[in-house]
Image 1 (cartoon, one colour):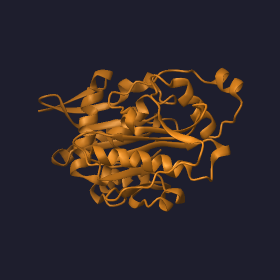
Image 2: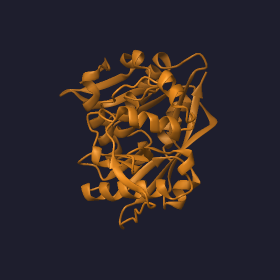
Image 3: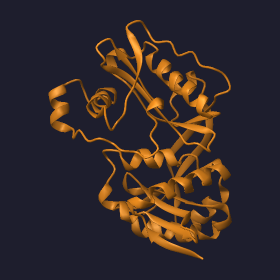
Length: 289
């Protein structure tokens, strides 16, 4: 028997297991994977006050077979279900529409190849919009040259222990500026605790003074064959020197030794094409107002 429940923080690992199984059996949902969920729930912009609104459909044995998860805050959501429980999808859509929408409605990204989900979404009143997202893939069958410019070395950063250094790097790397006083008065320096985080895959390029200037974090879970890239950034004054490429390649080489055979990134940037990534899946947003 399948029962519904609202999410609690004790459900984190079972949701990750659900997303791993979903993507093991059907890669059309690779845009929503366990790593994206884990990264999101500890992101500074994630609205934790809404977390009990995540809906889970549970089979006997406490295994998740379906879920409706908002993306950072209400207004966009992921709806997914294991293939044998596909009949639940309209119910999950209805729940997401009722519980996860905001004033302008609700948007759901659906793979262009998933004709059944598109049909059910349209039957529920969702219509295709211009908004879209792309997942790119890189096969890890070869080693990658990860050579840094002179004066830089690889370092590992832990968001629970190197919180200040990492958030200061994000502040600069995501173009908020270089004013440290503004950063310190604007940002809460909060350790981010993620159950499946692997510091060995959290790779930075740092100078002789130890200050990180570029960063790539990969997520890999035993039992999967892929790594997920999130996030990547470089301080503006160090861009155009091949540093981000070296950091990403170093992280990919490390993930490969753990068993990853491919890597995914949610992006359509030409930067990733230059690194060898190719488009794997395209997703269109379906909206209901």
